[in-house]
Length: 79
Image 1 (tube, rainbow, N blue to C red):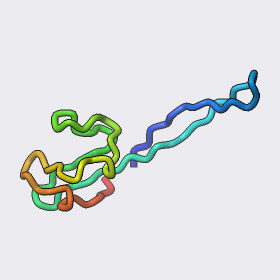
Image 2 (cartoon, helix red, strand yellow):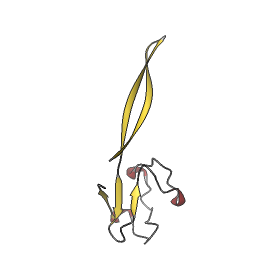
Image 3 (cartoon, one colour):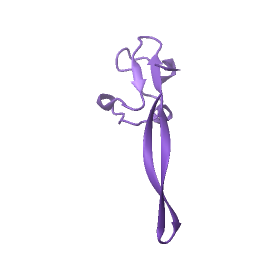
């Protein structure tokens, strides 16, 4: 699984900041009809899905760009 590290800071007091690291796990989903892979980390910019778009944020009416299968025809895969 690919992970992206996001740096954030926490305000401990009005004058002290602490940096924190958050790990974001990205997953891949495969169309069971044609095998096309949706990678959350890369998104699908040509299909209107920016890099980092999580699968749960992909619209329900979105379809596979290769075969037109519905979002329901995708399964999470580990590559």
